[in-house]
Image 1 (cartoon, rainbow, N blue to C red):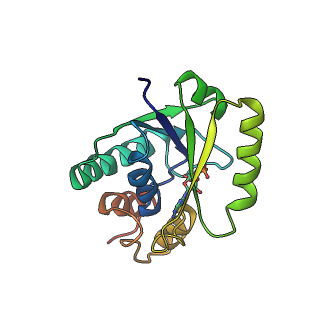
Image 2: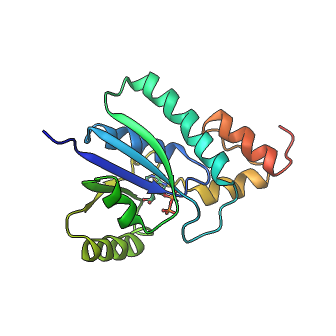
Length: 170
Ligand code: ADP
């Protein structure tokens, strides 16, 4: 029997508790979940690729221990058209998270375009959990830059990375 492989792509600049919630839920739907870390998507990232991948890696290790997830979760950086990357990796479905209405227009368009480009690959949307609904990487960076408490939005090691990059003394 073939494995169902899911791809959760994003910039993860940085990874938040909202992303982690989607990853934990997606991992229960698929045999294997690829977390695709985009070199740079439609925005210029604050953290370089290596740092973003390392932050995702650390969070996934903790998540796997905490939830004893059976799915195989791998982190793969990519720098090409998403749908091509998905096809190359035998992906059955692209997973995206949806927060309120703000994500809808962009996500709807992207899913429709991707389906046109490859009708074999579906996009599955998981609704953000109410608790994490309002978390975005950009807001976290903005609050962190101004010295606000971001510990409820990201893991402690990510808090430290944000403080480092903005020269904030804890
Ligand atoms: P991208 O640049 O592709 O939008 P992001 O890292 O910002 O990359 O987001 C990756 C995916 O995670 C997107 O589908 C986004 O809607 C989703 N996402 C981001 N934050 C949350 C959250 N708090 N809850 C659920 N999904 C989220």
